[in-house]
Length: 227
Length: 227
DNA sequence: GTATGATAGACCGACGGTCGGTCTATCAAT
DNA sequence: ATTGATAGACCGACCGTCGGTCTATCATAC
Image (cartoon, rainbow over all chains, first blue to last red; front, side, top):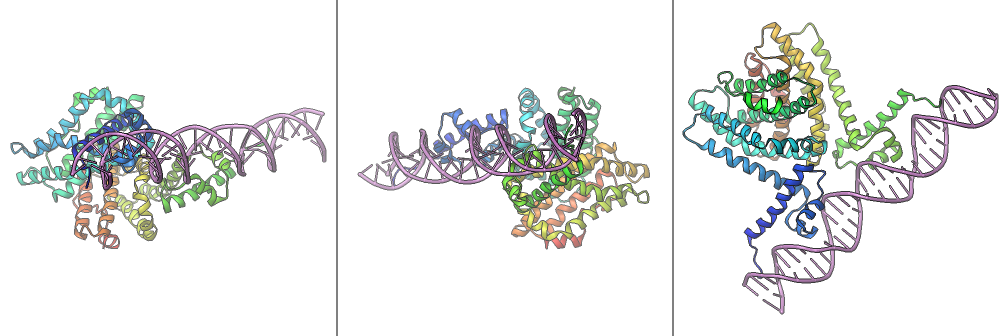
C-alpha cells in the first residue's frame, strides 16, 4: 500500500467546488454556469474538478443536497420536539420557511431571474425530487402525531404527507409566478392573497383540520413580497 | 412587392418539423435529440430549420403546444356539455385521461425512460407550465358550476382550480415514480393503490365533495399498469 | 522508492447556432 | 407578355462553446 486517503481533507476540497458552484448557480443559473467558470473561480483545473465529480450534473446534485441538508437541519429539531402538538409543528415549519426567506429577501429577489429561466429547469426538478424524498418522512411523522392527537382526520400518514408535499411545491411554484406577475403589474395584491389562501385552505381540508389554521404566509410577509 | 407568404403552406412545412421532433423526443428524449437528427429525419437543412424556428427550445415549445392542443380538443367539449353536472364532468375528464393512456400503454411504457431522464427536465417543466395555463380555465368553469349546483363548498373557482391542478400534476408525477418503483419490485401494488387513493381523497376534500367521488384511477386501470 | 492521490492543461467530439449565398415564386412597371 | 426587383425558402460550410477524456507531473504516505 501507499498513500492513504484523508476523508476530511477530501471533503473539504470538494466543498470548495460545491460552494463556488452554488454562488454561480445563484447568480447565473445552472445552464449558464460552465464548468470552466467554477474552475476560474477557484483557480482550479479540469483534472482537479473531474477528480472530485463525475460530471457537471453530479456537481449540481451535490449543491442541491447541501442546501436541502441545511433546511433539514432547521426543520428536523422542530419535528422532533416532544413539547409541540402537530398543528404547532406545521406552523413552525411554515413560519421557519417564511422567516428564512424574508431574511434573505434581497438575495432571493436577485436569484429569481436565474431560477425561473427555462434552462434552469433541471435545478428546479432536482429540488422537487430531493425535497420530496427528504421531507416526506418528516411530514409523515407530523401527520401521524396529529392523527394520534385526534386533531386530524386523514388517511395513511405516508401517503398524505406525499400529497401535502405536492401541494407545498405547487404553492411555491405558484408563489414564484405570482411574484413575477405582481412585479409586472399584471395582477393585484388581492389576487395573490386569494391564490395563496386557497393553498392554505386546501392544506387544512386534506388534513381535516379546522379551517384557516395553516396560512401559507402571514399578512406581513405577503405585504413584504407582493406590495 | 414580391413573393407573398402562404400561411397554410408555411404552417404545413413547419408541422413536419414538429411531428418529426415529437417522434424523436418520444423515442430518445429532448436532450438526446439533436437538431441534426430532426434534419436527417426530414432530409432538410439547418437553414430550413432555422427559417421556421428561432431555436431548438422554440421547437420544443411548438411540440408541447401541439400535444396540449390535442388534449384540450378532447376535454373542452366535455366541459362545455350543458347536460352534465360538475362531478360528472370531472369524472369524464379523469376517465378520458385514463382511457387515452390505456389505449397507448405500449407507446407510453416505451417513452417513460426518456421522459423521466434527468436531462428531459425541460420537457416535463414545459408540460407543467402549459398544462396549468391552458387547463386552469376549464377546471375553473367546472368548479364554478359545482358551486352553483351546491355540491361543492370551496373558495374562488380560479384559485381552487389552480390548487387542483397542482394536485393533479403531483399525482401524475407520483404515478410515474410509482410505476418505476413497482417495476423494480421495490413496492407493492397495495402501496400504489394507497398512494393514489390519497390524491383522490385530497381532491374530494378540497372541493368539499362527498368522499370517494374522484378516484384518480379505477381498479382495472390500476391493475393494468401496476400489476 | 513506489504506489496513489491530487492537479495540470492539451485535446476531442458534439452540438447549437450563424452566415453568405442560391433558387424560385410573385408583383409592378413596362 | 416580358422583365426586373423583392422576399420567402432553403442550403451547408463554418464557428464558438462546452462537457468530458487522457496523459503527464508532482507530492506524499508507507
